[in-house]
Length: 163
Image 1 (cartoon, rainbow, N blue to C red):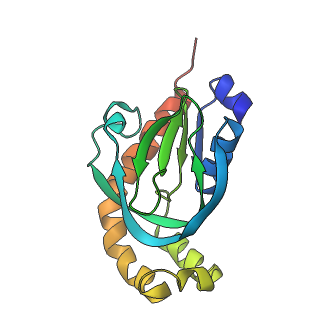
Image 2 (cartoon, rainbow, N blue to C red; image 1 turned 45 degrees about the vertical axis):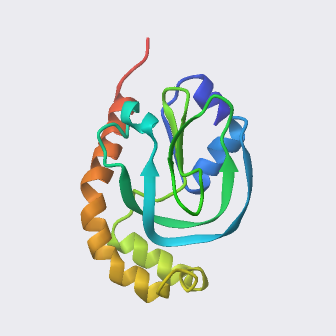
């Protein structure tokens, strides 16, 4: 990952991928103070307004969280989002690599798979697994246009050749 960043390879690390990207580029991954699981908000930082993936998005997005670890930002990283539970939720390192602690890529079947595969984790969320399932249609409906925009913008970064 550090080589990919150094060589300008487009990189999008999600959840564990964000933690690995942070560690590979000089950040520190550590145990968090407790799980952040289920649908919840992230607040975009002012720097997100100038970011190639996040520019023009609302100040707050409801996303799927599923982690208990966190990270300290790598040197020279740009912080893009945080939540009330965890300060570090999204960052960019270099101009073509992003780490997202949360899940924006999910659809209904993915959320169902999370709940079914990790029921003890799901039970730690407000309302448990049933609460996550009940919130999913509405949360996805609101997230989908922004998710699609972020992923389309990342695809454009991938498609854009350097030099």
